[in-house]
Image (cartoon, rainbow, N blue to C red; front, side, top):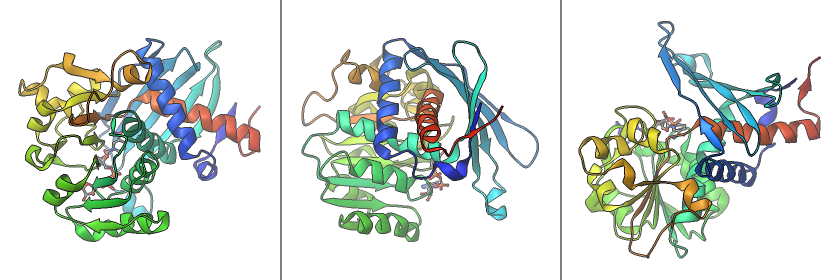
Amino acid sequence: MYIVPEAVIDGLLTRADSFQAVEAVFASMARGAARNFPVIREAIGHADALYGFKSGFDRESLALGLKSGGFWPGNAERGLTNHQSTIFLFDADTGQIKAVIGGNLLTALRTAAASAVSIHHLARPDAEVLGMIGAGHQSTFQMRAALEQRKFRRVVAWNREPSMLDRLAAVAEEVGVPFESVTLDRLGAEADVIVTILSSFAPVLMSAQVRPGTHIACMGTDTRGKQEVEPELLARARLFTDEVAQAVSIGECQHAVAQGLVSPEAITPLGAVIAGQQPGRQDETEITLFDGTGVGLQDLAVANAVLIKAIKNGSAIKLG
Ligand code: NAD
């Protein structure tokens, strides 16, 4: 078996590698070849931590395994990331352990890849302005991956605490794209693509602020009760997701479904668009909305890809 420690992963997997891995597993899910198993998430009654497992199997890539980890709110004070995760891969033919792989950076990369895949398949080809809502840890990953999907000429951004936008401004400067901190009204009026990446429990972006033709990737809502946009916006949009069961229970769709504004049958798995089973955007005035809830198969897909690279360049530690 191999160990791929967190410290060697930076620089091993490109954004293009992550994009490819996530796009492929979404399509595999749509073909019925890949399945996520029920998620376990528990408060452990120690250190205020939430701990759990996300697991699954992809018959096409033979990625079998789980991501284990969760949220330790006191970690920041210790100089550690609050979210901690480790991915375990198993041999699909024998069940033997194949690898233990650091999951922190991979989680950020696979989450950014999901919104990028949605932009690639659903945003208008002529999209020029990217709107970013949220400026936490995950936001720079989302922005870098999004910027590679269209010829964006400008970024407009909003965050509740505007000073946090400095980290996005720095990325924009590095990439060479003009950046402006704006109100939500301006953001909705100017952006062709909007990425939301908040840990909010109330809607921040309102339906009236979004114009026809926009593609929105809602990436922050991954738990019951979280919410980033007004449910009326979902009722106006064509809806896509990674997995419908998660979208209606823990994703952005949970609120619109609970209010009877949207039926689960109206939500299309993005993989079905990738696999050519369902149409994507149908005209330039449609609002498309991707509800990215985050599935275990995404983690296994990027872990598989990084393991191959780590073995090849000698950074994977071989045991036994
Ligand atoms: P973070 O704590 O670093 O940043 C949180 C962001 O949300 C900041 O921009 C903060 O200003 C904003 N925010 C917090 N409360 C708010 C409120 N009430 N109203 C408006 N804005 C508010 O978190 P992060 O690591 O950047 O993650 C952001 C979100 O993405 C979290 O909810 C996290 O659980 C989620 N996430 C989802 C996936 C997925 O696959 N979908 C993967 C990783 C993280």
